[in-house]
Length: 384
Image (cartoon, rainbow, N blue to C red; front, side, top):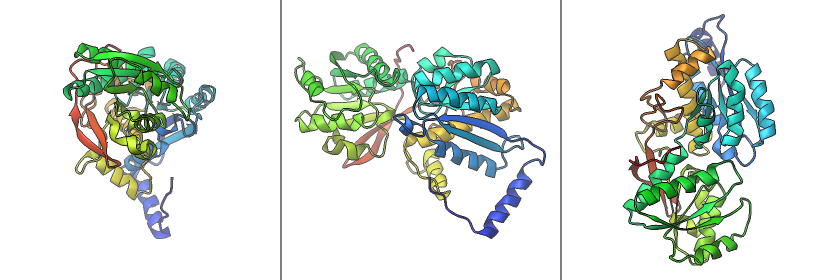
């Protein structure tokens, strides 16, 4: 992150203003972030997004007259490192924790935090297995995979598509399995057909074997659906296009990466996906991006905003609980209803076991640029 330097006079004024905003003897409220700053999960976490929202809150006077402090550590997309990091953060006496973007790393965080009733929110994870594994203190900030997969199934049927092939990977938690499986459930429920399934591993440069398997399917699929992450979400469309296969790729929020059009190349026009929001003029998301940019932060992708939204959710819960005690904040989080967020105009946890109800945005790529084409809320959603 590149930050802009402030003149000495302005900095002094800011310090005086901040000192006046908080009670002299008030302890700060600490939020821990067990973040994937490096490694394969890094695109789906954003310490900068969380830090920007903390800055905004503190500038406005903090929470309950106390300053928010974000304590972040790099778990390096590694489960063993994550376990060390989460214990360190819990020992700091945090009010809440933000967890990594995969269920296999986030679930142990929630389990360790549970005896102290510390609420745990994932910034980028969409796997509903996470809150289901620890339903009394776990929350997704993002929508669940079942909702997203149902949304792309509805979009596909609405566009007249009837056949699809699934691509499945077991290399990164449940995401690479859950998205195609939930899609298949919803797609068939709506009248579509799954014509085949192909397995793949991440990190390869040549997927000709998978392309050949799809070519051999009879009938031919009109769509490819997988729980792709970067860079595979761009590599597959590029290689399919190079093989003269114009099959469409429909997917979920992992496609929402500014680098995707460059990775996909000429295959970018094959892609449509659902995501958390789009920074159109007049939206809270655009306002957040603009404000954070002015503060010197660089917007990486939509997970920057989700990190900010996670902080906003915690702030709202602290205010409603009138306490920074973890158990009280956790109880307030569970009762969140119709909160106006950053990516979504309404966020509800109440009665949903930590899986939020949120509207989704449909995005396509035209001439190398992301373009929103509407919003969607599916009627049929597979059970978690």
